[in-house]
Each structure stands twice: as structure tokens, then as C-alpha cells.
Length: 165
Image (cartoon, rainbow, N blue to C red; front, side):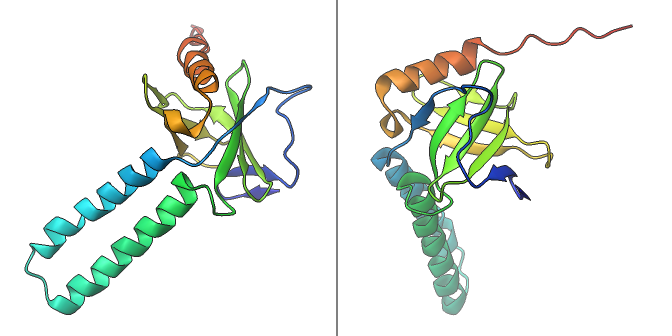
């Protein structure tokens, strides 16, 4: 079944044949703190803007609600749409598995960022031009899984296809 964000299936299927192993994600305190700091930092310029009090109250409430929802979905992994596991094969196809049991399949995009303490996994699906992003921090998975994922994403990129003249 196709839905916004990629191709989903009701059962968490493997990518091909035996399929790559799944990497389970866990809640991240570090990501939760970072998300709240970003949301709270957006309030300072708002409060200093001199806007009417009713507008400040409404916008503050919206920002705080968004902070709560974002933390619940992306850091605490408590939302049905939260990504709770990933699988990456050698040809850079990736599957994201949600808490509700659905899977989203695509390919690792070239905009994926891999550093020592942060992975921003960009996934392209055939349905949409924009990529879907997943932020991964070291406390979200086992240290060995995090290292293997970083190595696989950084060093197993497909070679560019030579243009034919």
C-alpha cells in the first residue's frame, strides 16, 4: 500500500531474500534534551519581539505543544508513527519500521550525514522528490550497531555510474 512518505506494508518485511538484520532503536534522553532546548530557544526572540500578549501566549502554546509532540515521536519513540527499527542492505536500500508495525522502504539518499556522534539518515522513496530524515544519536542504539551503521553508510556508497557518450 502506498502512503505519503514511502511504500508501506502491514507486516515488517525484509528488503530482499533473507534481508539485512534489523537494528532496534531505543529512547534517547540526549535527543529529548536537544529538542526541548531548540524549542525553548525559539521562545526568546518571540518574547522579545514586542508582540501583543495574546499572540505571545498563543504562539508559546503552539511551540510548546510542538516540542512535546516532536519529543514523543522522535526521542521517546512513543508515537505509533515513531521509527523503532531500521534495516540497511549492501545496495543501500533501507527499511524503517514504525511502532505500529508498518515499514517504509526506500534508498539511502546522498544527503545522508555521518559523523562520529551523529547520523542523519536521508531516505528517498520512489513516490516523492523530498527525502525523509531520521536522526540517530549514540544513545539510541547499541554502540556496536551504531559503529557498524556509520561504517556501512560512510564506506559502502555505490560508485557513481559512468555517463555514456
